Image (cartoon, rainbow, N blue to C red; front, side, top):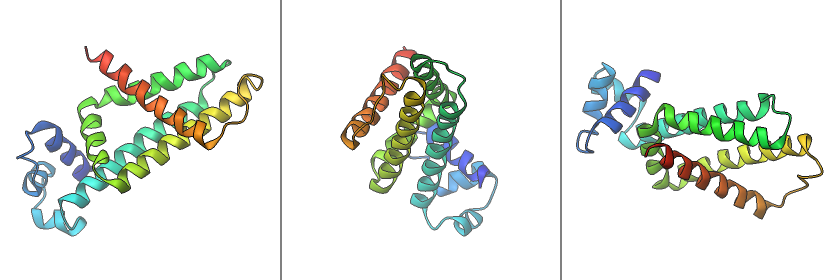
Length: 164
């Protein structure tokens, strides 16, 4: 499945939209269209698979940094998480942008992406509480939602600044 996913991303970011067909994906993956349809019923299923795979991969990478960072202060941990997020973005910037755009058009994918972002914010908050309990107390669900949105907005701003 990895080769199909990679082929899909290559076709997605390498074309003008008109080249994004199952034929092009199969050709790029080095398989027949029939083989592709054995795994996925349609182009939408391929896209959902790729988007899910990429957002889970990126989230796992950032969560690993939250969990394993040797930061001894909240500020250092936050810098580590931002750096990891930017690293994940910059590895495949065009693919990440395309995937985010696709996720925005699908309510289920958008919900999954937001859930993963919220998981990162919750784990980050927990680590911040451990590092500096007097500075980081309990947090309401509204504050978590706001933190998740702030995290997303900061990443978008930082990633667009790096591309200039």
